[in-house]
Length: 72
Image (cartoon, rainbow, N blue to C red; front, side):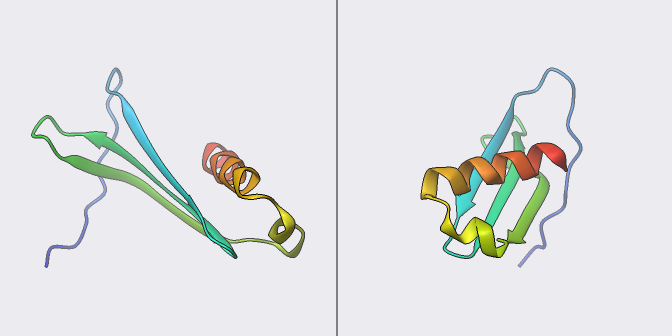
């Protein structure tokens, strides 16, 4: 099993964002296509939600993930 290696972004290349919102946590993966029909990871994010965030609807949790990612 190979461990994932983080790559660096290049200006002009499209980025891919995967977001997930669980019941008590949120996460994201920022990736780019490497030209070989595969993707390279650029950044991982995961965080437990705060007590007041646990009341959020699913779409609000997904938006929260994007906000946290943009502030990172």
